[in-house]
Length: 360
Image (cartoon, one colour):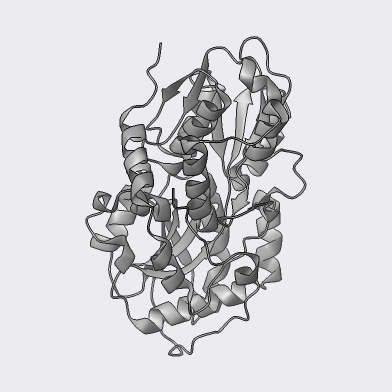
């Protein structure tokens, strides 16, 4: 199978930012909104609100930026709205999660071609997987997951990257499980986990550090199991978002349990997804055909935000790491080149999505 070659990584994060010249005063006097494609209280929302608090100081006139949540369809509803309905004057942009993989997997899911959007910036990401400790026969360490009985995985939608990765990893580990999906964002899935409706889920580091670890982990109700490492098409790498957390990556956990790395179709598909989704998990996106000055102004603002001490301090307090935005002039072209999955991978995923596990 052809893998996805990600032509950027740590070096891309350390680029010498080329700040495009923008028309001074483009945003002065305008109401600016950031659209989040998941519900309030989830990890994307947590990050977006810190972003919105600080980005306005670098938009002409020290603007206030309003956060609007539009969840549904595993993130597709808000993304479609941004491209199809939202004003194209630069006054609204998206803070989106999972959109690169969704489009690459099924371009038909959008009424407006996602490759025509204006990709302003992106940042890599990961997910932390965790399970309830009261799963039979009792979960004490991460490796106990292969002994789990009655495991039920939760999700946001059958074609959501998080759902697919949850299923792929459990299938590779040989764990029998049920599956409940279509929760309205991580906050809804988190509540279902607390109520025992599901007992296995994953969240990105902002909500894991800010909600799961200090509450559910601290109380002994859940334990972390693994996280998705960064993958550049050739090798696995740790991610800065996991700094300070004593959690194995999925390849490390699998090798600890089985003495070797996984093999076969599921493994190749897993690597393809984390290569794309991990490199561009969060994206700042504008609708198609917005004024070039709007794109240039917002991109220049994000480059300044990357070195903003107050933004970094608030990010650390809210979710335990400082986002590393890639916002150079070549960002949009790199995104467009990566919005492709190998045909055989897409064919496999189509069948995989159409045949989720049946609950007993």
